[in-house]
Image (cartoon, rainbow, N blue to C red; front, side, top):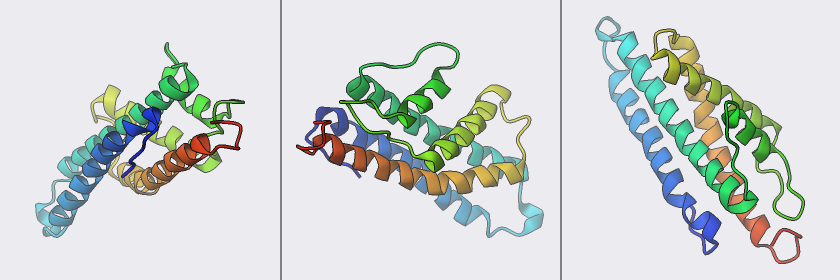
Length: 166
């Protein structure tokens, strides 16, 4: 997915590939599962599998953001608000280090997905709604390729000789 000679970006390819595999596995599961007759469908099972996959992919994205915060920014948020602080940090340009990684749309989508991941993680799926789970899956399907492209763009920018970031 991403190959790089820059140390901060070289380790991101495998992380993004694992997240992509999780989405691919879910798509294969749903393609097989969703052809079953409606009376044989277990809504809870489908929703739980989908929620777990979204949770796992978001964790992969967050791992990439944490790596960038550590290796490029030199500062990783900690504390109770660290997950939101990480998104805020990636939304901001750091003069002399890097431009903003996240634009408004990607920031908003990741904030929504972070909230969904929180519900999955801390409520054990008890409060999940199938419609909201499917909405989160649709959001993840558009957000994941966007984050991959944002990371690629950041790498090109950081490696460019005349941009003030290299």
